[in-house]
Image (cartoon, rainbow, N blue to C red; front, top):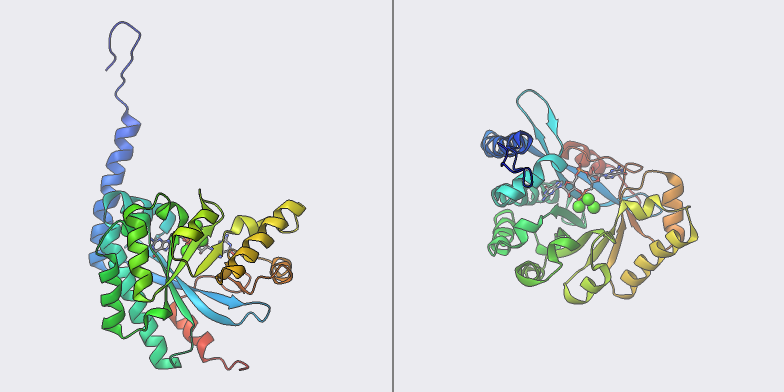
Length: 280
Ligand code: C2E
Ligand code: CA
Ligand code: CA
Ligand code: CA
């Protein structure tokens, strides 16, 4: 309805209402999907340069709806965050990842994978129960804390407060902390001083910039240089071409992840990779 007078026009916004209703529908659907077991995790190898040997994996969630449609996490994680359902879903993810890590340890030995990574979103980091959830999952499945990497984004811990306290508590458990999408946030370098970090994952945008301007290569070089000086692991994300992998190695990168090496894979495919003999 429009206000009279012609100055202020308050219109009934049908598209906004539709969006909100859709959100509520998706939220209810997510809750149902969790109970119905429609989520599963894929694992993308993290490899050593230049050999390409898998040293770790990152877990990535997928949602297969009853009609077979696969929904991208980019579409449902934000809704799960807004509605708070990410706390419940996140606990399920952490438990599943620890169960999988334990299974791989049993089948392939305790050192088969250096690290198995789990993504944790901003909303989970302001939940004071998160360190307990992680500690309980590690204990339940008898996974050593140092085998788990928690990936957080800079934006989630920027501003300090409760998120920073949670990350500190996680670090005290002995889990490894990785700063995801590094270089794209507000305070990339500043955070390295305040937040207990063990690894940085250099965002795909820097990898895509390789071979472009000298400035872009200079930034990519500086990022791994700083990390190395601080004793942090660096992983280059989103490596798609052999030329990128070669250049990254020349610039000092020793770990990478991307479609060039492997896509996110179901656990059985990781099993097959772990079963392959590799040079010691
Ligand atoms: P992310 O944590 O930055 O994950 C990397 C994304 O890049 C993944 O997309 C992965 O499939 C994709 N990727 C890997 N290598 C390449 C490559 O060479 N080229 C290209 N173009 N893409 C590549 P995915 O699986 O769709 O996940 C998207 C985002 O959703 C993730 O970004 C993460 O922020 C979020 N996400 C995924 N799984 C979880 C989860 O279990 N929990 C939470 N909280 N967030 C998750
Ligand atoms: Ca990640
Ligand atoms: Ca990332
Ligand atoms: Ca990302």
